[in-house]
Structures are given as structure tokens and as C-alpha cells.
Image (cartoon, rainbow, N blue to C red; front, side):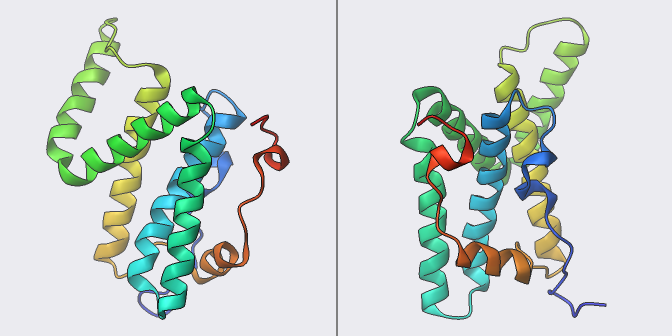
Length: 166
């Protein structure tokens, strides 16, 4: 059994296959990259050296820039997800009421006023914030040691390599 704070259970939310309801490969990649970016950002608080903090900050920035400097629709979707994550982190009660109202409206056949991508972003932001809060309360780091080493060993690949045309 791992020592407290050193759970080796991988985080599914950084894997594209965790998002089967996404509209396509681009959206799955965006959602996995967003979760990775948030977890990398959180991992900076667990870093052991200034160099590791710098590496994590660079990876976080690279992921964000990959999605905010590309096509307008992808950048808009990323910003919406980022805003939703912020809102869920800072006002979870308000956001839960909003999500409950949206889902109730949908169940009654009403248009909640969100696109499908926006609704998936609200749910992802909710789930990611719940996961991170639970991990913090258990003393678990936001990335396993293997995930952290993998992130620090990589460079952002050009989008073409991931199958995108930007």
C-alpha cells in the first residue's frame, strides 16, 4: 500500500478516453489537456525544487497556449471551460444550483441556453473540482509520480502530430 499522499492510482481525467460523450477527437483532446493543465498547476504546490516548479509552470503555459492561440472555436471552448472551472472552484454551491436548474429544464424539454459543449464543460469543471478537493483532503498529490515524471519528460508535440490541422 502506498504511503499517505503517494497514491499510484492514475487519474482517468487526463486520458482522452475518459470523455466518450465529447463531440470528437478535438474535444476529447481539449478536455484531457485541460485536466492535465489544472493538475500540473496544482502540482506546483507539491514541487520539491524551484526547477521543478519552473518546469511545471512551463508545461501548464504550453498546454494553455496550445488551445488559446489556435482556431477561434477551440479557443472559445477552452476559455469557457477555464471560466467554468474557476466558478466551480470559487462558488460551488451557486454552480451546483445552476447545473441542477439546467438539468431540470432539459428533463422538462426546455432549452437551457447552453450548447452541448458548454454543458459538458460545466460537468467536467464540477467533476474535476470534486476530484481535486477529495484528493487534497486525503493528502494525495494531483498527479501520481509516474504521471509527473511523464509530464516533465515531454515537450508539447506540434498539433499536426496529434491529428489537428492547426
